[in-house]
Image 1 (tube, rainbow, N blue to C red):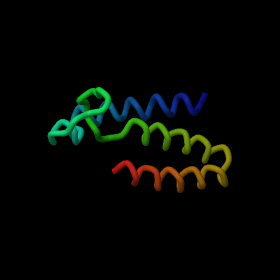
Image 2 (cartoon, rainbow, N blue to C red):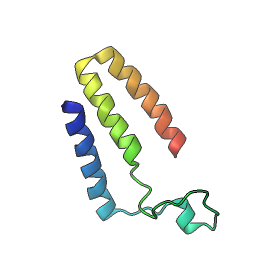
Image 3 (cartoon, rainbow, N blue to C red):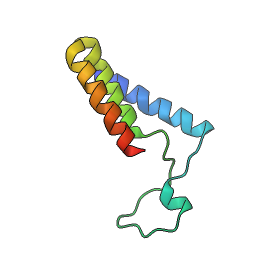
Image 4 (cartoon, helix red, strand yellow):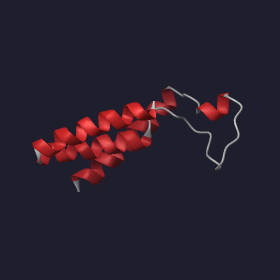
Length: 82
């Protein structure tokens, strides 16, 4: 229940941020050939990273040891997306 609420809150906050700050996806501003069609919506903030951090936060609240490992792994994964 907490994880679902945290995920929805993260997506809502992402929506609010994109209303004030829009960063186009790289394929919009650079000429590239897309292999798969994709919406030309905002690239920042990342919905996947925000949702994953929301999930890690709820795990951190319940089980501190597992939550810290989740945060470490997500910090590394979020850097790979940049």
